[in-house]
Length: 334
Image (tube, rainbow, N blue to C red; front, side, top):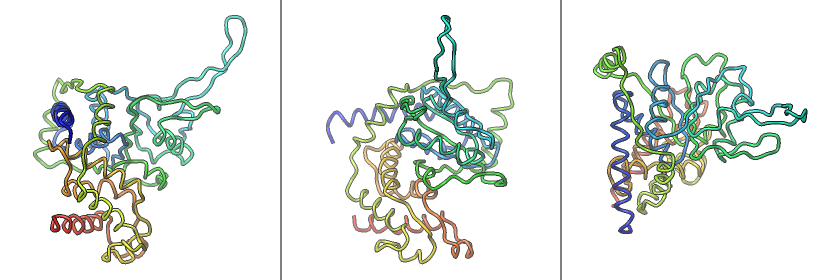
């Protein structure tokens, strides 16, 4: 590691600790959710927030946009939402001299942090409008390529209940999310703190810690962080072990999976473990980071077989078991 890289990583780590402290008063007691959201932003990716109503998902995204210095927009997805409502459209205008021309009006996707609220309530046609934006950071409208904001991140929310009338996200779009973040109920002490903090006469204020340019620089620095060969091996072993019917499939899986993670999952893990190490105050990731991020990175990139669903198996249990075996063998060899 170069002499200039170490101070840069340490300085970024200090800024991230300041950002976490700024978020804490407005999103209380969900440190792992905050950390995974920051990991997604630092890795240059998108995040899918899955949780019941009223758990603060919208508040988290709003707070993140302020702390990270990003221009944000919010879209409430509904069944009647059209692609033009997201991307924008061209309108015909008449100038002062009577000359008529088309003018493009940008949609809410033209921002730096987009909150896609209840994304699975929109039709597949509208959901697909985000695919190009999420992958290529640009959209094509009327044959013209239009770049989006830099950086560009999507934080989408999804309600795990009330699935009637919803449209499950296709595998291609799920794979575009770097992590799936499960937002659960708070414990009693945390809920008490939330109750006292949010029902008074004043709400907790939040300050800006990063700018968009500083976040882009942080994303570039993440990619320069060194990754040991043992961590690379753990990432490859884990991803390949979770694919059904291959020579590397974990023997304990049996017929439990119908499909597994592709190479994009390994790329996501490679970036995410670096970001987690940085947030934890370390200069390089370890096998522990791989185990900790296995479930958020892989759970939306796999599917149980019919037989596994009938047996009552869960993807989370399978991923934890495979991750424990893979990282355990790596640590034992070290």
